[in-house]
Length: 239
Image 1 (cartoon, helix red, strand yellow):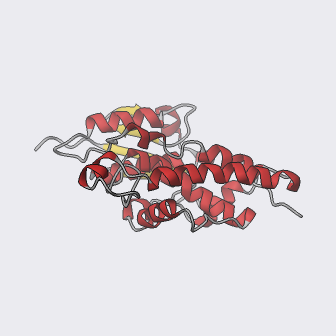
Image 2: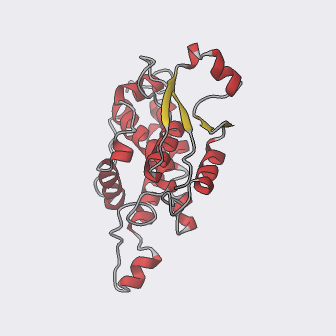
Image 3: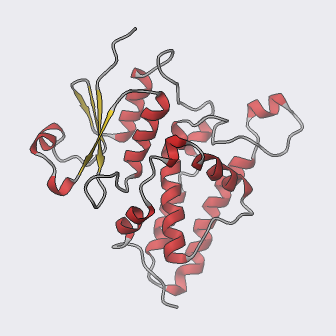
């Protein structure tokens, strides 16, 4: 048995300074380690009162950061690459995607969502909503299009039935996208009374499957935590 690395994840704390806060990068890291089956400790950090030892560990950094044995990592993308390399089969689950297209799926959603939700002008709302909706439609098309391995199994299928972005198991791409989609869902409902249209069957199926997975469901912050994080930037429209 290989010696298990000692890992600690420092995670942005909620308003109560104890539970997990609204941070899609922190959630992404939490999901990766859980899916890999790694042993790690999770420490929530209230950055308003960050202990000196943390400031010394990662000066000027915001969570998440990872302490791997005695090594400090602070960049989320680099942490992901590092963990995929260090926590490899057969001891740990491989999480990288089979298809490079899966990594970029939905990458424009969060930017268009931000423009839509931060807009204070009712006259611009319809145009911004259409731009945002077009990114959801694009992701939906990706999720409904069969992947090569599905076509190998059945060349006649016209619509994918896969559970997640890259197939039937959660991957690094899902760990990146799902925390953002959860924020989108909560904030759009509150500020625009907007829900993901059920006609987007691929996207609806994807989210329904994801919320059944402990690694996603139990790493999501409370909805109230997300709304508190957005109350200073999201705008209600008084039509």
